Length: 463
Ligand code: SF4
Ligand code: SF4
Image (cartoon, rainbow, N blue to C red; front, side, top):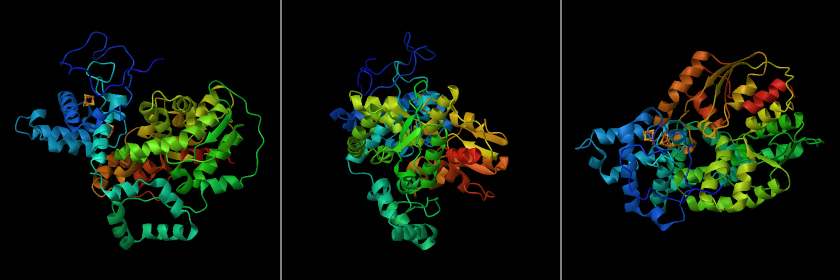
């Protein structure tokens, strides 16, 4: 299938009216234009402002997304408080206030907006925000503290040196040190920070006993999985990666870890630092594409990392064959397990009940359009009562950590935390471990540590 043309914006600004076959309520499937991030015009501030004005005006007339995040209320407040009460009354210098509030969850594009391509209005709000962030980054307007915070691989490597692991975790718990961290890394003193582990996922999995299986292909799965461990998986939640390996092997799947990897690039994408995303892509793609060519399926335990390889990197490199191969070859863990279940290849003998589970489906998994596979699988486990929460947790990478956005992110999380609290769960769970921690952090009376769904599945299997 040929890719749609690379566009920065429509050739002419569309009028408010429905185009034949491409209007609101049209039957065409939503599509997405590649990101023209290598074109000079992408970084042209006047062109950007003109596109922001066009799209802000459409959003002002629509206002469907008002409850999704803080970006839309910020925009509508700017309009309503302007002299004209229209977008032309907003100072261009204030356009960035909206951009600052977008954490690229993609929900507005994927779940709400009727004006996405092929509609003639061609609204792609998240990618317009990304373009504005990239312009800001190129102008040197992103603070150094925020850039440091998104160096996840470097942080993880440093913090996994045993003596530094202890120091980093102790610093996390010390109010005095958290004030220093707040200045150095722009992390709010009250934000939940994950623990670091010197016994990384790679070290743990390396110690597991060898496991011989005869991989059985089924549908689009080949029964052989190479895991992209992820920075967070390796340094912050090594137990979850180990659990993933054990669960896959228990279900007759051959497993290995991808030989080497860099960050998927999502933290840098959220910053608008597309050169760093490009650098990580150059590191990762040859290794991942080779694994696919050698007959491995790919998997990552964090939805945002899967989304990078499934959507964002392919939109940045639409012509790159390796990128397209990796896009086709990567899976969400529960999507994969449910595909195996469909073919009768999932073990459904569960020996442990999970009790009451407040399960949250993260945005970056929802927008992959794979359906609620984690919920479906957990529902197969006897003695498990699920509260299924499909609402933004407000964490979204650094948004839930930063000094200027922590309070807003807690406000976004409040309805999710309240719903979980009302359910009185035994455990809080989300495929996104940062979201699970953020939700639990907002719950007053819940003491148990959150658990990743793959760890719950291992527990249910009793393995
Ligand atoms: S991508 Fe997410 S955070 Fe950004 S404007 Fe859309 S809903 Fe809000
Ligand atoms: S992104 Fe689309 S649905 Fe959301 S407010 Fe703008 S035009 Fe409306």
